[in-house]
Length: 425
Image (cartoon, rainbow, N blue to C red; front, side):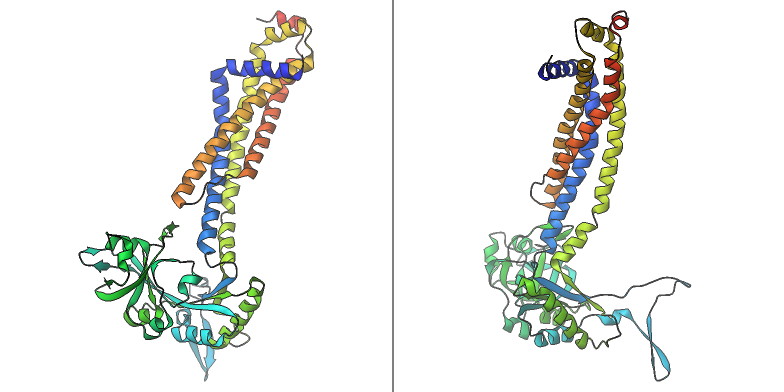
């Protein structure tokens, strides 16, 4: 008998034992589903991280406040920096190191590197916006920016215009609405929001434009927000938060040079001497996404461990079933050998049966894993994800499982004595 005949015989045997095959395939499929499903979900999360944090592009970075590390020890006392002035020790609180409006404006004026610069600040997240008889829930976020804020944060206008330099300098009550806010207030169409006067916490604001929808990202709805000038925030909604400076270099190859010059310039503005550590941090948008994705590696390790443990259990179960099958088919093996069948042909048939069962488990597990993982991607509103490398790994792993689980039963079947096998009851 050639390989095709042996394979056909093995497949018919597997198909004839539906219950036994189904249970074993289910165990293997569950292990592969757990592995592929979690990996698919992680790749969807990575894709969402990249979209969320890399909206400014790889040639941009931000300067933001970095609170000093708080360590506990020696009586749980908060660690503070101490300085001596006039023989007296003066405590310097970490909370006094926020980036101020003056420091941010001074940096933008001094930093002459060829780049696009922007100043922004977060105001609050509990605003109520109203127009005529309509109003929003008290959960609208408000940000303050300048004329470059939209470009540096990946926002696009759908209707109207952006803030200009005069709007920022005067701090007048003008704003740009997020898509969800405009949709709630202007039921006849969001285009009608342009040039309308809305009230933000009973303060009138003229709407300059409406942003395109960007959806939600990890609990942060980027459409449920309002953007006005940072000078207006300072006047009407002083929050006490730190200002953020965004910089986008004209050339990707010059980003590192720009970051070096920006750090040097801002250290001077913050009045730091050469021995002091910078109390601010420069973050590239793509590096933030990379750090976020690296933090998910433990999930990949966990998924691999879960999948391997399940597959080990499936391999033991498959070996047990194949051993039972050898015992049940002892007379059949004896008959095959009696009519001229070789021992290696019998061994090959049992080995192929184990591999077929493993590959069926891999097939169903991969399909179910991709479905489960992409159901998570639907929640995150990302594209369809298929982890092709792990699909290949899953097929290889299941093939190895089938080989290892079927090897001993196949060898046992091949060593059966045909005379003893024919007499077996």
